Image 1 (cartoon, helix red, strand yellow):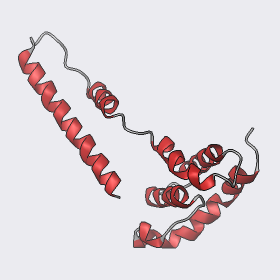
Image 2 (tube, one colour):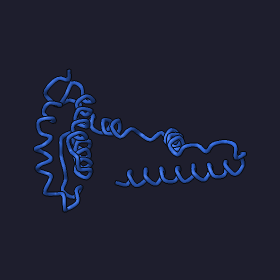
Image 3 (cartoon, one colour):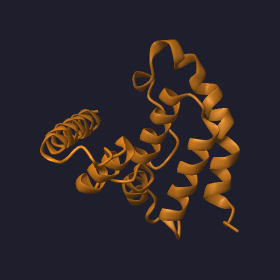
Image 4 (cartoon, one colour):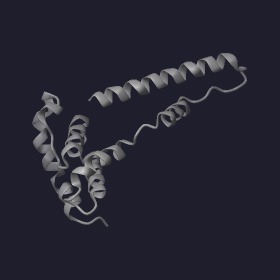
Length: 142
């Protein structure tokens, strides 16, 4: 949780600094130039920060829990991530599920990771991902 808040604070700071620098640059340069698109500035900020890919970070955290269980732990983790991301539509449940997998190596959702209003949906979430999880773990890709 602290990592998420820290990442958000860094991104917000960088965006604000980029916007301030863009305003200063506009004041110092002739008005003949077209202003840069906000998306271009955002890409520049992301490249400066070298923010980790969420999927890559998930695999990095998940794989050590799979070593010794599976011949290709990264593949299993990638598969689990892809199925969880595609199958679980609710953001809170998906994030809790991905957190559980990355921390334990198996689909897990702690009730305190999910808002009380959505805790009743945990069982249905596990039912929805049961078959894809088994396919990731026991059926070869391809």
